[in-house]
Image 1 (spheres, rainbow, N blue to C red):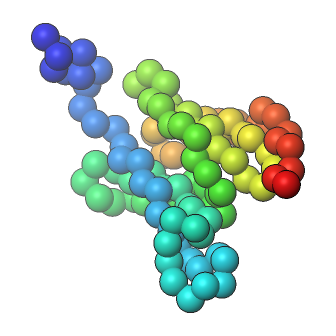
Image 2: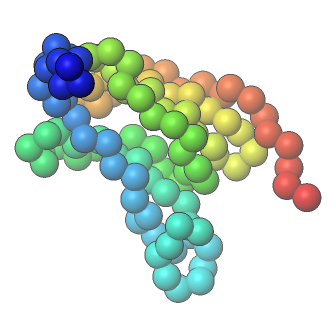
Length: 104
């Protein structure tokens, strides 16, 4: 049944949040046109940790098993892959995947 897979994975370990924290493009409003920050927080709402700041675009994020979360994101002209431990939200790695061509 659909809920069986989630039940076997155990309780929620973290909540993933993307938010606009500042007016990065100078248009005097917070919107989807601004850079985003990424945070992880415990399920009870405590212990929020900002793991990424000033990201152009989050391409994907996925829980890599019960212990980690991976985030693929763009910052400037670089595509990056980061992995964070769900225990303490420490960065396990953050590496460049590719250099993207400049927009015309």
